[in-house]
Amino acid sequence: MSGRLRARILGQGINVPSRVLTNADLEKMVDTSDEWIITRTGIRERRIADKGTSASQLAIPAARQALEKAGIGPADLDLILVATSTPDMMFPSTACYIQNAIGANGCGAFDLLAACSGFIYGLNVADAFIKSGAAKNILLVASEVFSQILNWEDRTTCVLFGDGAAAVVITAANDGSGIIDSRIQADGGFADLLTAGGCGSRRPIGSNTFEDKAYCLEMKGNQTFKVAVKRMSDVAASLLKDNGYTADDLALVIPHQANIRIINAVGKAMSLPEDKVYTNVDRYGNTSAASIPIAMYEAAEEGRLKKGDLVLLVAFGGGLTWGAALLRW
Image 1 (spheres, rainbow, N blue to C red):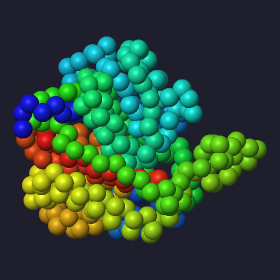
Image 2 (spheres, helix red, strand yellow):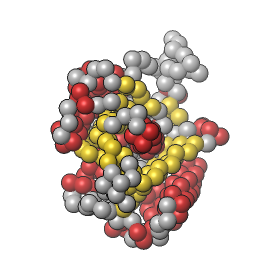
Image 3 (cartoon, one colour):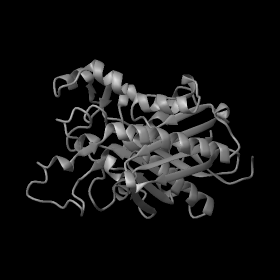
């Protein structure tokens, strides 16, 4: 319906490391096999950033590309949001580093942390800023360097994740396109299913910090799988129902690219044919908050997203967090 103000994606950009880490490479590093990884996860390869690469450095080319495709300059931005679980440092925010690099100094800039649900959380926040009139143009970035927080001796987790960044420019529109509705949820009762101890106040820096494997990502895989599938399916179903749509109305679903078994289980729960569910997990692994915008960029480039299409984005992540967004492309 034209005339109603919505937050619309005006431009997209991505940046992934050039280094490819294949399953064959991992066979030489840990006790695993290509067959086991593909069967359990659907992942064949992932991208790994060069040592010393920060989240902001990975994100800057994606941010610049998104601005270029949107046809606006850095000075036109009112806000920069960065979804990341691997920030450059505790502070300043990664958003401030990106802001300075692209020459957008002066607008608001902050990070948000919702693990793999970060992009959906960012869309929800950006949507609220746009609809309230508090901002007209927003740069939403998702950038992850998970290779730096993995325990490369843990074969159950190190095979799953990769590095990558993506960005979108979000603007106000009244032509019927844009975010119809979005939903974000969390349940801290499942906090221990997926964690990265890091150097926060709960686990301050000590003499054995970097020998302590709890510094790295830890996951209870089987329990996470069950909770993730139910939460993603439920939030998708409720979002569609509350807005008067069914799964049949969807042109494409872009889920968080965690692993193929979760993606397939969510698709089955929603009674979706495979060709309506976009996947690229085989080539990138789980890039956390960056997975949905990387997939969305590729889907658009491949012609899988056309003007007027109804598109659903859905994710889950540590927290436990989850959420979904319904868009008219």
